[in-house]
Image 1 (cartoon, rainbow, N blue to C red):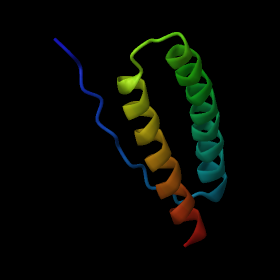
Image 2 (image 1 turned 90 degrees about the vertical axis):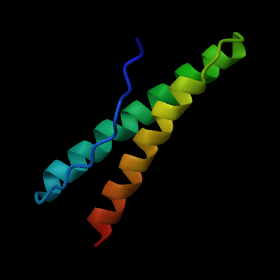
Image 3 (image 1 turned 180 degrees about the vertical axis):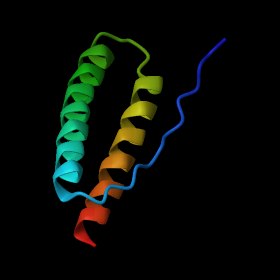
Image 4 (image 1 turned 180 degrees about the horizontal axis):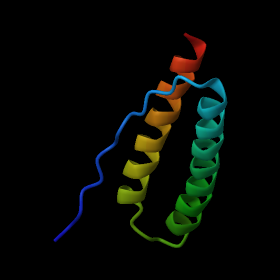
Length: 69
């Protein structure tokens, strides 16, 4: 059985909380990018990791748009 991770969107009304969440997402994006690159270089299948990374990127983009509004 495979667990499917579903992306959720959190609406923040506190700018400090938004900035903290953006930093958390940025760290995960950078860390994930490095891990994916290393695993791909070792010939591992990283397609699921890439899917999760793209979900994180989408969350980051949505939060960035929310902060800009």
